[in-house]
Amino acid sequence: MTGGSEGVRHSAEYYADPRPPVALFGRGGQPDRFMLALEGLAARLEPLTSRWRPGHPPPESAGDLTVRVAAVEHPAPDVAALTLVPAGPGTVLPPWQPGHHVDVVLGGGVVRQYSLTGDPADRSGYRIAVRRIEGGAGSGLVHGLAAGDTVGLRGPRNAFPFSRADRYLFVAGGIGITPVLPMVRAAHAAGREFRFVYTGRDRESMPFRDELPEGADVFVRPDDEYGIPDADELLTGFTPGTAVYVCGPAPLINALRRRIPEGTPFFSERFSPSPVVDGRRFEVRLGRSGPVLTVPEDESALDVVRRVRPETAYSCRQGFCGTCRVGLLAGVPDHRDRPTGGSPRGGEFALCVSRAEEGERIVLDL
Ligand code: FES
Image (tube, rainbow, N blue to C red; front, side):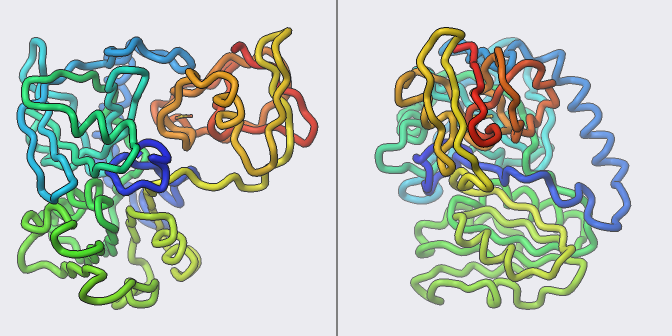
């Protein structure tokens, strides 16, 4: 998310919408037993595979898995697509579904989330794709990887659930195609009705155009040919009941969210952390006798803490990975995280999103 600022970035590092999914299987829809079974299996496997615990940043090279870079391709000039295969014993990687991402442990304390964008049926390897961002630590490290290098992985996890619907509208902006591509292919393979609008700066900058299903309702829409899209145009042909999946820059997501009818199943994944909503000024104390810092209405505790403790670990900055969670020693928190692994918060506080009431003081085990 996908990281950083690196934020309003244009890379496959992604940020999932911090709000709970509107409805996992669509409003009024019936749960898909096959997908439920996959979710259940993944949930049972996770405790068996996870060595990492929330609030305790992993060692630099650690991950649940170690994978080797088997190939590096460039589907667009500034995009690196990496094929990652098991580096140790075993020939298959854990199962995943469209919308899943992995945490890539890049060393130096840098952990970033990237969507899986290959074929879920091929468990011999994962594919991720990352757009290089000027000054982006995560994308810079990924672009420095070469065949034969190893990295740590955690996951896969699902913060962008692909659910059963009778009809879909998929919208991707640039590198936002990474989680959407497997969804489009799955919908096509299942014979679902769908439309996919793929936007980008120009054709050359838009990766994986050659992997889109032929004969489907797919509209590749570069800005230099069609102009900047607006929500009405992107919603051409939209009918009530259509499930909307969008991944791209925040303005694209916000425009669509504002324009769709109330009750539409809407799922999004964005390139940057959401702004603080309904924030109040509160305080954090670092340790029982450490400095007291004021967290303004429009900033996260993570941003404030990192000014004095720049080594403080974080990753998604949207409350789902657990990397920034630290021990909570005192105070009444307003928990706003939604850990995808289902780990309990216990006495912990997610610095990136959690807050407190006006004037409250939160004491952190930092
Ligand atoms: S950085 Fe991921 S939960 Fe805070």
